[in-house]
Image (cartoon, rainbow, N blue to C red; front, side, top):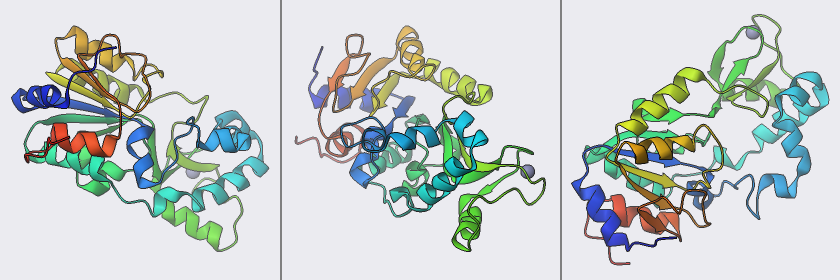
Length: 257
Ligand SMILES: [Zn+2]
């Protein structure tokens, strides 16, 4: 594992014209949204939560759906605020260096922080939207949560009667090919690729690192734990994401760590 100083990573970003950022759950933990698999993770604490994330159980069992709606209402993401890590990526966009922002997160904190929605590629969808499994209709999640609050335990689509769920990729569900294609295309166009808060174990998204690397990009990894790509990265920066990102992506002279 290589561990380049922060200022070296920063100099690559300063010299870059097309930075592609990939974010995972680790960037949102400082905003109070638990990682799924970490020691404080949702699945570690509640194995039933994993069942609720599986499309087959979800479609087959109204009880799983009822629990899922209660869980969605109680999600810490509704009150979460973007942290210094999210804001550093906004600053990168203001510097006209952000080519694209691929995220595995469903919390929309990047858009809330101020990144342009057209820069954000949500490979796992968004919990702030619902979708109908029957007719494909989509809309704001809060509209359905209002119905749950009003007493509907498992609200059905008002157009077709179909099962509603969050517009996210559940386990057992296919990724959206156009979205993945776009992520791989921008990865190949990067001159610096920064992977943040992801252990990079889930394909095809992890493959974006390889694509960027093969196309000649410098690869910077920022994650508290080791990742699957530490050996091939040009710089590995372990530690606090919300402390490191302002130092390597921001415009100010804040690289004093
Ligand atoms: Zn429908």
